[in-house]
Length: 215
Image 1 (spheres, rainbow, N blue to C red):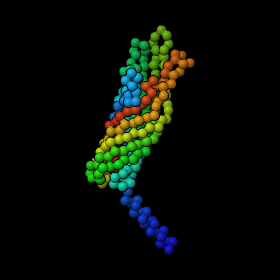
Image 2 (cartoon, rainbow, N blue to C red):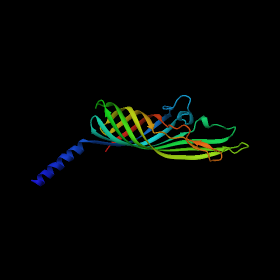
Image 3 (tube, helix red, strand yellow):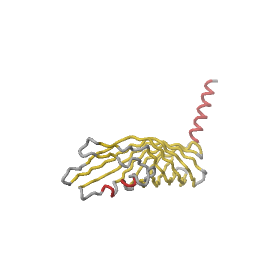
């Protein structure tokens, strides 16, 4: 009896697993820094960073026809904006890099060939912000730092999933990355003194397109 029950359990589990769809793939995105969360008279991320490119590995598991669970592991790079252009004082360069490790869930409003959906990702962002200013003035005003910090964040999405074939999906979405405050840190004892990450919040919007392939 135990053997028969065990075999029935294996068959049931096998049928459930076979009914699920697993997809892996990647996406490319173009991101726009925003000043969301900062008042108009405050320095924001849009003021200090340019638009940038991102790439990510994606995984999706169709728990059922209306719901997926998955992951998003990506990298993004942005140059510094003209805010840092102070040629009369010396040479300056700035960059903003982001590594993200996110879990994702999405709900689909249909299970046809074109599926509009809303989704939410959450997890950890590793932010690497660098400034290198070589002063050429009579007094040394040079500043150089690389700020590295892990921050939690969430990323709501709205998108369309296109079923190109039973094993190929095209994913197009708009995503808003909302990252917990990147704090401004003042260094009064440095020579000269400076403020690290004066923009504080580091939120952004991105347009993304990805391809997913069934396993």
